[in-house]
Length: 318
Ligand SMILES: [Zn+2]
Image 1 (cartoon, protein in one colour):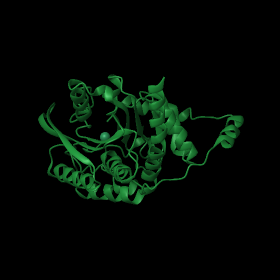
Image 2 (cartoon, helix red, strand yellow; image 1 turned 45 degrees about the horizontal axis):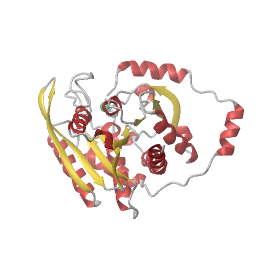
Image 3 (cartoon, protein in one colour; image 1 turned 135 degrees about the vertical axis):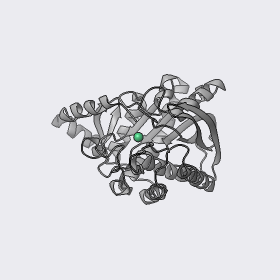
């Protein structure tokens, strides 16, 4: 994922790390409303990541990729969700590749939709074994756990909840607008073709959220009001340290939705190891990922969701 300029941006923004005035700090402490953690289990999410990593590298079209898909489908069906796949063939620099987006739904009071998403493919490397514990694995495990928790709730959600596992996020050769984000680009095309794009009211994307040393950046492409709700929720949960004020542009599966006017936000820790040195390397292994980081993100999403739903409902009334 993402372009090399991002690393430069990261380095610059790290150097310019936030200096808050003491009065701001006091105000923030006084206004802090304690929010409790949720039923999201970091251990369950981590166990999914462990299972996926145990399959080995999971690039598009591989045997392990197919086995992972079977695992995801079985889990999602087990939660009682309505599950389907979106199969397509994508033109890549390595020829035509079969790809499969996975979609699980829980019906809401409204037919309008909130999407929670992750990519599940791992990047293809032929010179080393890339198991993508964080990149591909972590967000997929967390999304499964979010699906389990939200499927188990008694009350009907105000909006349909759609859990989307994108295929083909990773570039086959080098990241470009035509060699990346195959699954999300295809999904947006299909939604638009069917006239359903306006039903997608918000998208929350998770990517690389398992790093033991969790520091999520503010992606500057993301929709600000959506991002602000998530950051404020993180602060109230006591996770402020992990949701940093550093801003950087991250090209990811949310961008095709943003380009069509769908509010979308990417939760991504693009600082995986010192200077992101584990990213897209043989070092992206299970020992770098923690249940705690997965839980932090899970809690924030679950606690932010009612606020996002309320904001969408309020916008309808205006
Ligand atoms: Zn990647």
